[in-house]
Length: 473
Image (cartoon, rainbow, N blue to C red; front, side, top):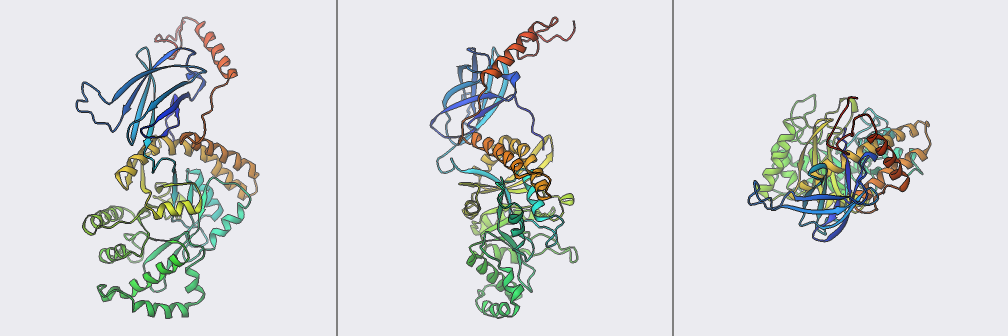
């Protein structure tokens, strides 16, 4: 994933709506240091503004100017409403660059945007990667959190904790497992719980069978007889997940096991399960291949429209083999949480502060399908284009260092230095930390080489310095 280079950045990039905010435009390279005491023009464009005559009047465009000092441009502005705003930086009618910000209402402002995956597998069940190395692969792709949900194995996450014990990581491990109640084809992803549910039937099958008999008697009368056994076992599993303090996620109803070529859960049973209230979230997108994902989204849309279904949605990879996965790192969740901690992420998912992302396109032309509320999807699109892709480049080295640390090749300090770099970028972007400004040494260096450039043979340099570009002597 390669973001296009930008001449300038603006901080903070996420700001409170309808309040005056101090903004700073800074260069991303020394070449673009702004000239001392020169005036620059700014056009602020409200991307979702009401433009009754957008061909002529451009009433959603606001023009202002500011004077540069110390190589940067500072100005105060009140950004209206909750929306994206594009800011064009110009001088003498020449466009120097564009930056974008997003203004949020109070309930969303202050929350962190986190990228994560709540469904993955290691070689401890049927995956192909080492658990601790898998954490590094996720971080390399810019993930803030992930859950290792090996089949009927909760303990494998502890292997990750042991390898990285005492190391400050930028990625949060969410506790998890994939529950397969014996005798049922319905899979349930359990995340966040304090202990394993699967171990109850793995270690004491007789007690499990006795409890299932009791649960069959609790199945609602409207459930068709052919579904009663699977429904009862789903009731048991989700109850036990909730007793453990976890979330029960309904995953991949349109997954086809290779030996049967029939969808894992039929439409009628999927509808009954999703409307039952047993599940805390629906895995809308993941390792299901098309048209499975299309059917999953259509089912969700129908149930919202016809049944009034209100259930948080998540996107996951269900990754088993990184080298053969069509869903990693292309299907994931963005959640809006108070911080990047285990409990805050679980709370955010439970509250429905999530957006499902399907990442398509190529490395130079990212395309995204986003599912959620209009409000959260609009914000997520901004973040995908201006935050996550930029920050992923910072996280790459961190993920590689994690894997090397697991093999004893590097020291933990290398990881922690890179964690600080990614944290600093995030905090500047969301206004939790002031931007880093050019110092006098940097300014003097660039001024020296600008002057030398202007003395070159019949050239005035690039358009940063002049409209005239001459390459010949």
